Image (tube, rainbow, N blue to C red; front, side, top):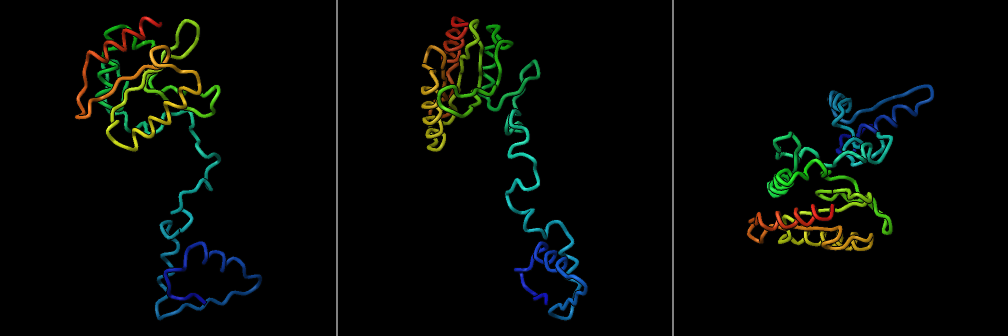
Length: 194
């Protein structure tokens, strides 16, 4: 018996119809059975509406791909792209100093002491093969962003990153402004380390 209710789903109907061994009698509440056609449509599936990995072979199929790459909207002269105008200013300064070709944007950084992985804004590899990272902090006035940065900062510390040695930061002013001299100063510090 199929009641006329919103509780009925494509999956429930499928389960009921496929359990019959030799004979199936289907009773539909109401005068119009044409509503059953709606259950043939994919949007009637409760399973498809769930946030699930049921139909994928892995939790994140492209774990090494940059997440949210569609947000890379600012293009440099060489075609490489970054997320924000502030990062664009950093990248242009790196180009000016000849460091852009030595930089990897959002390269995966694996934790060596504290597990996990981050994607620093800009990563450089020094002559000894060690990573130097530059994070641009664009929204510290936003609580969730600040808390996320505090967590990242602890992760960096736990994995041996120190300010001015292998961890560098710049940040937007509270009003969203950006001082080019702070970008130049950090870029020059990184150039000295490389």
